[in-house]
Amino acid sequence: MDLSSTDALIIVDMQNDYCSDGSVPVAGAAALVKTLSDLSRRVMSRGRRVQVTQDWHTDKHLSFSENGGT
Image (cartoon, rainbow, N blue to C red; front, side, top):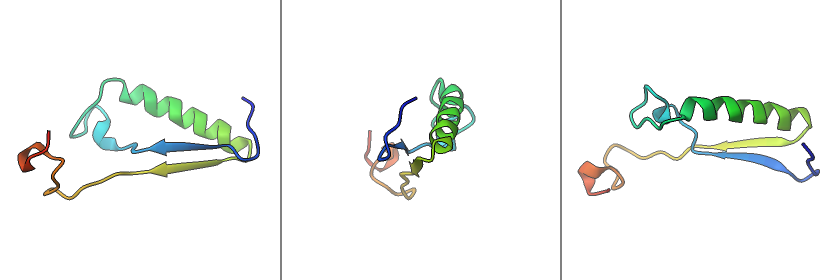
């Protein structure tokens, strides 16, 4: 993998909730976790940054269907 000195890996909203035993499971999440873990190691071994973000909401947030979200 060729990386420039300014390249980085950004992982957005990776949460246990999306895994098979989470509150909103997504098919294939376990395979994605392994893939991202392997990729993160490769990127870091080349001295590049890995940034991980997490989006979250309180239980009263509008995004939940019981609060009017879809």
